[in-house]
Amino acid sequence: MTIDEIISNALAEDIGDGDHTTLATIPVNTMGKARLLVKDNGILCGVDLAERIFHKVDPVTRVTIYIRDGAAIKKGDVVFEVDGKSASILQAERLVLNFMQRLSGIATASSRAVKLLAGLKTKILDTRKTTPLLRELEKFAVRTGGGSNHRMGLYDMVMIKDNHVDYAGGIVQAIDAVEKYLDRTGKKLKIEIEVRNFVELQQVLDHGKIDRIMLDNFSVKEMKKAVLLIGGRFETEASGGITEKNLRKYAETGVDYISMGALTHQIKSLDMSLKAEQK
Image 1: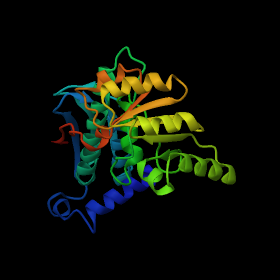
Image 2: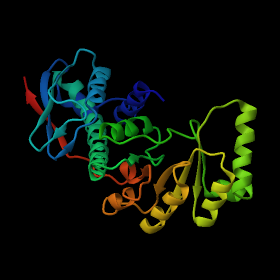
Image 3: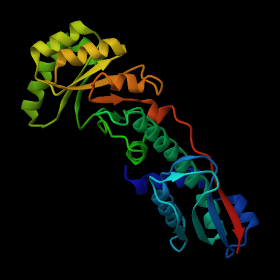
């Protein structure tokens, strides 16, 4: 789904057959002005999206932007001003706020995680734990905060997880099946496999034919041992049970990537408001 389709569907969901409160209370040609006011500290994300929403509702609406995506913001900052028909501003208001507050929350959480790893080689990744149909926007927010994206979906990387292994009959069977599939289809995709313990890890190391190993729910001590055992032969990724409190300890094991679903599904939206001004 494209960004324009997301905006159109979201507006249709909200407006339905009309914004009857605005239609009843605001004369059709009334002109207005509003400011996007920040009420939290964090990292800004969603400004360009907001402008597209205002223009989708009413192409003649003018948005004057003062702060751009990726900037650090604080309580009291004014991100932009919007001028146009009061009815158009009111119709776009909630959608603009919903997106900007959530995306800025994701960018802020990503930025905190990245800063916790200052000086280390480990990169922070998101996951597929995103809001359905909003993945592109939420993964953009992760990048805005300085994080990196894992695969976008099921189509752009092979990721053999525990259930795949169990259904396939084992690690070797799963890897070999993937190799045959890629050869048969001609697809050039990186292969990652999840391991749950050192027995599975050794099976992967003995068999090879993959690009990255995900070490799932390993303790910090186990992670350090596993990274040393892998010895740079494959990329390494830590996942499961990792929070801001233990993030740096995991990174200090030398693991290449740490994936955190919390970046997109356990975030606090940043508080913002659109304050109207009569023209």
